[in-house]
Length: 259
Image (cartoon, rainbow, N blue to C red):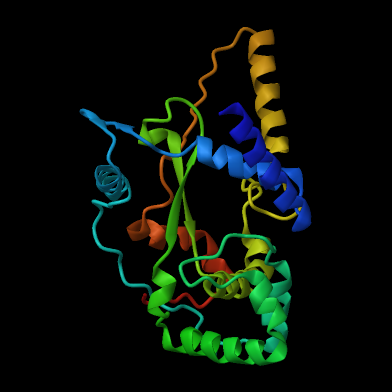
């Protein structure tokens, strides 16, 4: 058995070298096979593949289901005509898409979109403008391939996995175009307390400030209370409306696309 395993690994290394891939790709493939989800601990031990899929669907269905009231309708303040998406915007956004990323359900990759040249960009331009002005996205954009990544702890508990959704690269490209438009306008309206996910900012400054507060309270023997908030899931969709209030001064037209 050891000889067979050695021969198999040797063949895999040879294939990786012939495809001009590094050792990280080979190590990643080996670790992926070792971290396969073979059983789950719930009320009982679940080991069959159909039962595991049902339990995964139930677990994340409950985790991401919102019990809040329906989202209030959004009002367009400071309305103005929305500019069409240009080929330059798409080309710039496409340059920011990284190669070698796993595709979504449609199988499209960043390399494929980049190799298509101007004809593909023109088709994407028509699609993006249709979505932007019509407010309706293609049905394929609402589907994704979900992969569970093990973090740490007991690998039989679902709470120790992080779900990653592999979205359509076309949808990611459209999101990048919209993000580039918003980033130029919203960055000036962000409060100084918002350091994460901002160009030129870092949470290191906030961590340094927090450490200074802790040290001074210890030096002067003062009481100190700290509260840390961690989220098990992203923002609840029905609460997105509250996220727009900090940007009311940016004079943006806010709209929702239907999937």
